[in-house]
Length: 257
Image 1 (cartoon, one colour):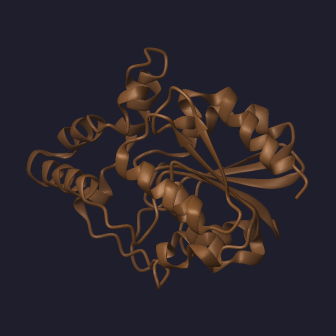
Image 2 (cartoon, rainbow, N blue to C red; image 1 turned 135 degrees about the vertical axis):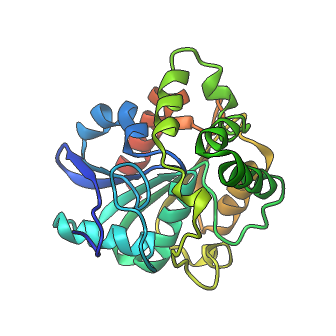
């Protein structure tokens, strides 16, 4: 038990710790293209967020940042680099704001940020929830995969089965229940300028507009943040361009500041 929940995690490699936080409806398997390359230089910790993959479903108030801190304590890790993609990036930012002393360097890839005034994407999410509650989780998964977030990845014949498999295994719990997670207040968006951790912001060239806007705001507000755009790919940058993604991560984490 970690912080009152069963948190499924995997450790590989040796060196400075590097945490990988997955995106919404995904799980630690999304990081498969990173593990071998990154484990040669770092102790890589990837895990399933509470409510996803093989970890426990939420049963009461919790925070993803608190779960990660408890997991680091459990693994005997005092400080780590933290990398999150999409929802994982939102959580990575919340963690950096809540436990700044535990974060050595921060990487936000195609990341959402709590407090951003979502419009089109919020409307789409509401549609997915409606599908889940009226037509079932299978219908919701199908509609979720129709999002522009997944279009570039699903157009890749080699990558599409992996994405469909991981999303297909998602329970749909968050579409059927109110998530009792606690977020930082004021919102992360309002606090970005207080992040002093060296930060790399990554984004796919073909990211959907609202996420591109979030990425740009994040880059502008975090002091001295570095930004990298990966050409020819969309939202799932680590899966769509794994070699380039890995190279940027390694370069940033090994660069002397």
